[in-house]
Image (tube, rainbow, N blue to C red; front, side):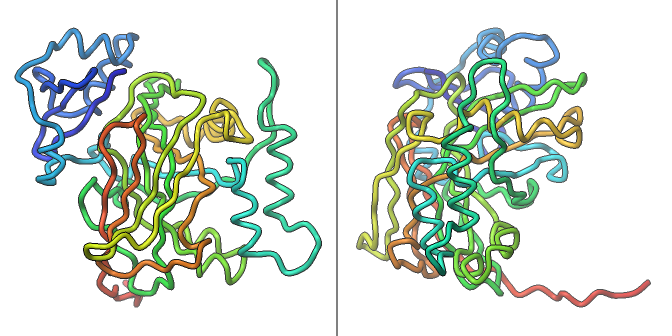
Length: 322
């Protein structure tokens, strides 16, 4: 399996197996991806064309906080963060517990059941569309090891361990998948719980990705682990499952319903799409505090994704007339 990592100060690391090397004459994964799209060849072919240089200790780079989000757009406004919810078997139970007020089916349970019945269509057919949300742009992308800043007005800052797909739109509007990473789709679950219509507000938060981009296809079954550390102790931990064997939708169906919109097929744009989860510490009564460290890991993705929870400064929201 081929993995790519981005060094904050510039440079790309390629890992295939246990050994990691710098990619020669490569400043960023984004530029390598553009080169691959322009030449109509796989990203792996561009890596081979550039060649590999000196070996590096990837774990040491991560420990020293030198790794960035594996792919960034040089203009944050052209990097979209989006996602889909209620896509994993078990996810509806977690969401339903936050919103259920009677024995009637909630909207969450209804859309989940729609996914179970129609989220994995046969080839050539269109599946049911999932829940979808906008999370922000590249300004909200947090590197592995950096703090996740929760807004000053937030009622909660909780982890969501997910898989994210990275996509680059070519000059002809065709979408190209670069690969997948671990993601912490950081959200405000107390705000969401107040009213389902506040879901959009609860998702307007930063998110963390990486440290390694898996280039190629995902396994059908993915085992992961989510943990929160408070000081020297583990506050909470739980395994999570992903991959299509554990989902009510195929990745292809989720991709289709995002990229069917022309606004998301603008040349040069970078998209990061998160595919959902069924595991939240919030569902177990945990509320993270400033300084707590989220760790999301999976053998499928190499190095773990670790970020501490921070509190952002209060913003002046007064609008000045011109």
